[in-house]
Image (cartoon, rainbow, N blue to C red; front, side, top):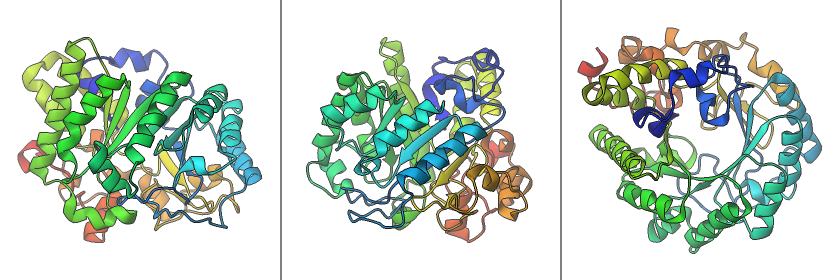
Length: 392
C-alpha cells in the first residue's frame, strides 16, 4: 500500500510515525503502514456468498449459501484471539460481508475488543438503516468497490443497477457519519475510467480512494492477459499522482493510495528526485518504514471456512485452520517453511528481485503473482514495471 497523497503531496512526514514509536497499537489508521512491529492487519472473508458476479473476484464468490462458514460463536472466538494477539485492524470482507446477518454483531464485538473494524463491500446493501447500525457500533471505515462509471462498473459486477446501488450506499454511509472510500481494481478495460473516479471523489466529497493493481488470483486469474503493460502502468501511476496533486493544490485534498504493486514506491521516489529532491529523501525514509509487501507478516487472511492464508489472494495455500488452532499460533509458527520464509522474503527472492536496489522498500513485491506466472513463489514479480536501469 503506497500512500500517493501522503508521499507525493507531503501530507505525512517521517516524524509523524516516529511520534507514536511506530507501534501498531498506538498509530492512527492513516499511519499504520509505517509500524515497526508489523502486527498483521487481518482480512476475514466472513462469507463466500455475494449478491454480485464480479469478473475479477478472488474468492470465486457465488449467490448461494455455503455450509462451511465460521459460526457467530466461532467468529467471536477468533476475534478474542486476534485481539489478544494485538491485531490492530480486522477487515471484514467476502464475498459480500453484509449478506451475513450477524455481521453487525461481529463488527461490534471486534470494536469492543479494542480493534478497529472496517468493511470491504460492494456497497449495494448499505441501506440508510444499515449505515446507521454500522455507525452506532463504531465502524472505522467502509471501503466500497467500483470499477468505473455505470456501464463499465455494471459489466464488471455482472448485475445491472449495481453502480446506482453502490452510490446509494456511499451516500448513506456519508449521511450516517461513517468514513467511506472507493476501491478500484485497474485493468486495460477500465483504466480510462481513472479520471472519472477522481471526478466522483470530488462531486460526492468522498475522502479516500484505493487503486488496486490486478493480482492473478481467483477469477482474476482469467484476466492476466487483461493486465496493463508495464508502460501503461507507468502512465497510469503518473496520472494518479497528477490528479492527486491537482486536488491537493485546489484545496480539495483526498487520501489516495495504490495497492498491490510496491514498485509504485520507488517509481514515486524517482519522480520526486527530479521535482523536489528534499521531499524525495523524506519519502525514502517513509518507504523504508513501510517495507513494501507484507504478505505473511503484516497482513494475513482468514477464509470463511477458517483456513489461514498469507493474504487474501493466496487461497491455494493454507497454514492451518483456526477451528483447530488459534490464528496467533498459526501465524507465529515458523516451522512451516513457507511461513518462515515469508517473514523475511528478501533472503529468498531470485532473479532481478534479488539484485534490486529497491528490495528493502519493495519487499519483493507480490509472490503470488510470481507463482501464478512462473510456477515459482520466489521468482520476480512479472508486474514490476521498473526498468533494469532503474533497479541497478
